[in-house]
Image 1 (cartoon, one colour):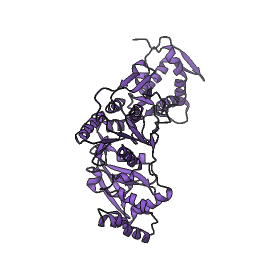
Image 2 (cartoon, helix red, strand yellow):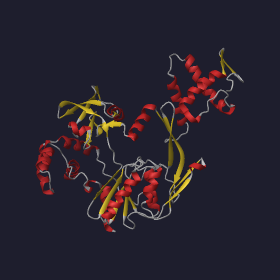
Image 3 (cartoon, rainbow, N blue to C red):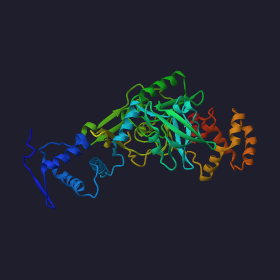
Image 4 (cartoon, rainbow, N blue to C red):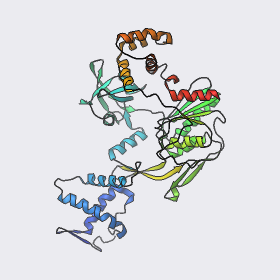
Length: 459
């Protein structure tokens, strides 16, 4: 073993003599955070020790002279964040041990949830939807319920992310929610469960047009699920297909490549260029595409990023399908997650990808062939929709007319006028389609999907 006192260097600062072995102790702490990126040993090479010397000296000064005692791990994590921020790369980041544990629990199915979607309304988080077969449905939570407290702690004005962190936990643990419903406060105790998330869903819009939505590429089974669904569609003899990649933030590169391969006969799918030659690679389509020659439309928007852009870009560049919607996000990088001994991790950009055409999309995104903006309510419409949510006339209408038709709306409009809700018929119709479970997937409410369907029908 190397002698730690060998080649001792002395640093003098205001009369304090610090031997190099003391620096090595600090380096050990830094090495615990940075894992395999730092070589921590008694005899430190000068080229590595030199650049770290100012950092270590700052650490020592803070620890010995700062007015209050500081947790060493807090300083080291701050240094790690600073190093990543200095890269000026919005995609490279530090992940705290707590956040990384949540990520791992989610991936491994150990992260418990309740099965609700939430958004802030009137200062309180409000339940937007309740998933079937989840703890939330089992205890009777409903869309529109306001979550006023979690385990007795008020939720007013807290961020949604903070609320999500409170609601999540290990599978099998309990959480108590205080719910405000129609002016009354109710308490529910729920047992967290693994919420099964389907990254791929499908349905038929009519007898001829199939609809396939990929939520993300996070699962290692995404490509196989897509293949299975395409085989089902083939057996059903669909004549056209809509692939929905909207709000798909990406995921595993390999899954994106395999999915793109399902729609292409041949040619380049994507090329990866990294600093390390080992990270550089070109992916090509293999023979045997699914549903060959049927018309294909791909939906994209600002939320389509990274892996989903690889799929959309390959389809567009090869002329395999028509893109409908708005510009995608524009994330042209490949990242890797490096776990660290302290339980945290860093997400680091290790390469860039290039579409078959070679056209750069970073920040600008992929432009659709047909631009269609999604419905975005104005501030006044948002206020009206909020009133419709609380409207007694709406609730009675959906109860009395579960299979309502257009001619039934005139009676409802009169009732809404009596409630002093100044809503036009089209906005009411849109709201009713969204509230009615039998019509929640009505394409008339989705302008981008409707346009894609029209394009395919014209072919």
